[in-house]
Amino acid sequence: MVNVDYLDVLKKTRSSNKLFVDKYYFENIFKHEIENYKELFLKEKQVYSLDNLDALIEYIRGSLYLKQLSSLGKSSYCEEIDKNYQGFEINLEREMRTISLFKRELESRLAKIGNETSNLEQQVSKEICRFVYELDKKILLWTSAFSINKAYKECKASDDVLFFSHRLLGWSTPETKLNEELALELKTNFGYGKSSYFLLKFKYLDIDVVSFLDCIRYPYAIKGEPVSYTKRFEVKHEDWGKAFVYTAYAYNLLNSNKVKFVEEIVVSQLRGLLKYLEEMTVVSGKTGGEFNRSESGEKKIVIQNDESKIILNPEVEEVSHVINSLRYIPIIGTYSKFLDVNGLISNIEDIVSKVSIVIPDIEKQIEKKFKNYSEKVESKITALAGMKDRYLEYNKNMKGFTYEKGSNDCTQVDFLAANPEYESFHDIREAALNELDQAQKNQSKCKIDMKRLVFFLNEIHEYMSSKISSKVIGKISEL
Image 1 (cartoon, rainbow, N blue to C red):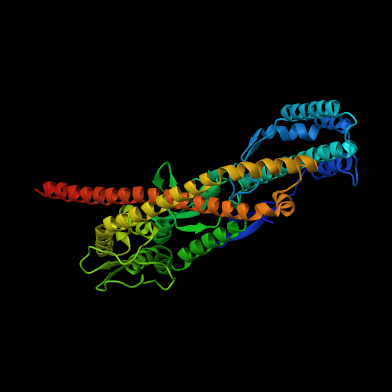
Image 2 (image 1 turned 90 degrees about the vertical axis):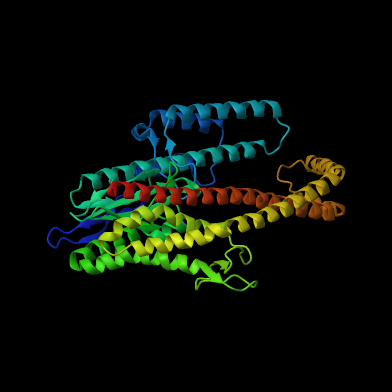
């Protein structure tokens, strides 16, 4: 598996000057130590005692390979590249302190309980076993990070390897020239949950090659500034291979057929943007009906001929796609090397202008939705307040039932099975809570959408103002 057993690498053949994708294999260099740990502490049907915790501390203190691992210190290794809170720090002293505190806590609990619980030994063994397994997972994580770091260094030192896959937190490669005309930058932002991304960006003849359609629909930002890119990949390890295959294809195409490269890799991106915007905004003389939909089934913003009303409710997201296109007009201007862009820019500005006219109507519709959701929130809060006494009674009896059973594993399902008179109340209250939660989420979304619409109008105003200023300055410079 990529980034586990091998790295995907992009190489260049010296003889034919072509790029190709290869694999760089590596293994966990501490696999024997991992097996040794399992042999010592994770034997089948092993019964654990406090002595095992002392042995664990001694193992950490005396282990040379763990000391070697601790040289990593803070690591940017992502266990799951599409999740939050990745990276870790190896601190062996802290691990030993944690084990000592855990042991003292167990000793204190044992002293209080005495011989009151018949299965005490079994409970202690279960808790220590869980602790030992957690350390085993950490050791596997640490050794995996150390081993792949070694592979990174070896790839960096290799003259044949241009790029290699990774699983590092954040991190992007600097712009690298593939030849005199084409440069590549890999923009990765791993380990940040929904903010994670995996982007590839070409620069051809010092011009950014931008997937305009993707950029307006899936905008990413660094410090508030939009990130432009040529191709977007899923935040998955296997997409490294796809990214390198695409890079090799583009580079080899440039060398074999420059005209086809410009049309397919560069110019087609711009034509795709204009087609999408034209499909999104449809001028209509009808006064009702449903949204027109593109072939992909997406909603379109439908503007009536009087340019004052809108048919039904578009998503604010669709409006944002149109407005976002303004941000890329400066880059579109650089494409004049390849085609006449003035007409394309005028078309985009015209579409944005039409959409700006209907934004106030969209705002009114969202305000109406917000009012409806707010009324629903108040209604559900009132309903739940009326259930307060019954819920206090329910909760008290639930706690009594759990105490009587003497088990932390006793669930709400068990309680309701033993007390069917509460089933109806429980279902009604849960339904009210779910409806309240959904109404509050919708209410919050409406607030965000209204703020976004104000922002869109400001962005259009700023763009148009700067354009007028540029024209005035241009005329003055001609005098």
